[in-house]
Image: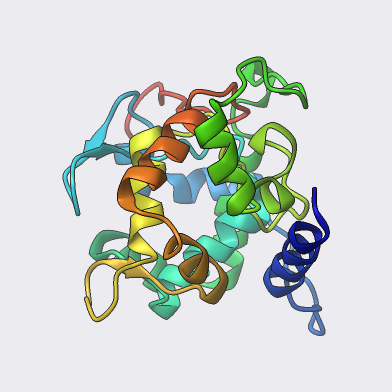
Length: 222
């Protein structure tokens, strides 16, 4: 990695670093989170389930995702930094404790069936995609094989559904829409350096990798 790329990666990591916690840390309770998950399983508990908004894509795998990232995502929906009517409505009714509980549940959900992903990807990207990933300094935050984030408040993205990754990345470009888009200074600045075709190419490669994420079917609706 060249010096400019190193400096860019360090700057990106510093910008995304979570704030120091001055108040008492909220501890998530997985058992309580399992109860709260009743409002999630209708989408995230059905294998292959697709959303049609803002375009057709499979909803993301969240079992095995980092708890701190799930909390950060829900907080962003509640605040309005992430604009999605359904998710904003769900997150808007949740307290910080409820978010922490739900996140704790999904982080350990199905852990016995989730294998730890090796740090070296078995499938290497093409030269074109490798150049794009280097340009975006993606691995500097999302870590080895895109499953080892440098901080648990960042998501695991390796093996996530590629069409969801594509929709999520494009959403950082959206401005002035009350129902679609994500506001994040670093990610918004990053994705604007890429065409949609380039974002799709990166999403397809990252989505093709082994994953620590799963969609785990529920035995029944509660």
